[in-house]
Figure 1 (cartoon, helix red, strand yellow):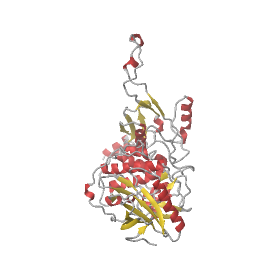
Figure 2 (tube, one colour):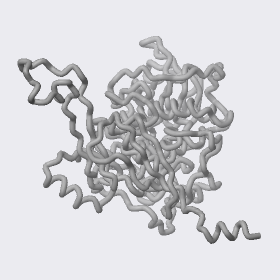
Figure 3 (cartoon, one colour):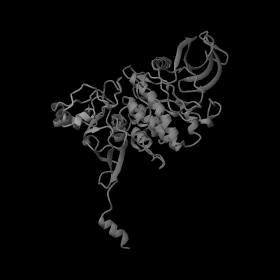
Figure 4 (cartoon, one colour):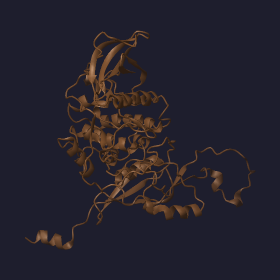
Length: 483
């Protein structure tokens, strides 16, 4: 059965308008005869060569998306089968797909920041529930005329602890937005979604896909081995740092979580999965009426054989739960490298408390030496000399708010990119962060150190020292002026 205009599914949903076609099936606007509301219905397009596997993926979409509840995720209302046709009933989002907006040309950085930030909040909720989207792309991001973002189509999403439906040697996703580890057929994690979101952000700012080599395999190879084109000069931090960090080839070098990325972009991250967020948006008055079948046609999700050339540039993701549900404390940090194990041991011997509840990307990455403490409240009685304490002692509670202190270890950051360091410091609670460039024989843009270090109140200004590249030598200067 191929449903059409006027058909009724499940004795309840009357199809009124075909509004889109995707890799998993067609999407129709429909009227819910029971509740009297307009909904969107995705109707599975059978794959005659592998119908059972395809149907299983479709049911996965219903189960995974229905388990998510967040204002930036399109809600799933119902799932059913009618005369052999499987369908998914979803929230009908008024507005345009992001792909149509990008087709109009580069977008303003502030608009990009707000859209990416809302996408990061949606991914944070999904990741906390143990769901990785696996196909983040502009066609799966809807933007309402008020600027509200809805992430849609978890059609190939897979719970991180579930048995996958993809066969050996196949890669699921859209090549232009695949993360390197995804293109190589390795385990996907929440960091995989962040890479794809970074590609989307880059495309929004430039109007062009950063990786598009003409064929699926060639594009996947570019994702693995080629750096993205530079962003336009007018794009500044924190947006520039956020996108550059997301596009790191090594998953461990990306932001530690989607919530961390959202915080870097200025989004509220408290109660990510369940809070009803009043998201800050900007008007999109030029959108006009909804144009569901926008041009150009969005790229379809594809299943294709993974490249067979040897790719040893980046470490494989460790086995085990890829992105487990985890709390979002504002001052936790992820691991920076195996060689910090002796430092961690030293801190443990000293009795310092080390956060070790977060694993991102690779389950065996060690937790760095970060200690979170709280200072004694700053009250006048705390600084009064003992010889002047003639007044009777009282038990009145301090009237000032305690200042959180974070122990910073400089070597945790040396060798990282500015974007990664800034994202981690922002997650820890530091808001006043500046950079200083100095000549160095280290690669340009590499972090050489931070200041201050040790126990540092989060109200302190943190200075990131970055390599500006090698300074001109005396001989080269003389040679340049002798002619």
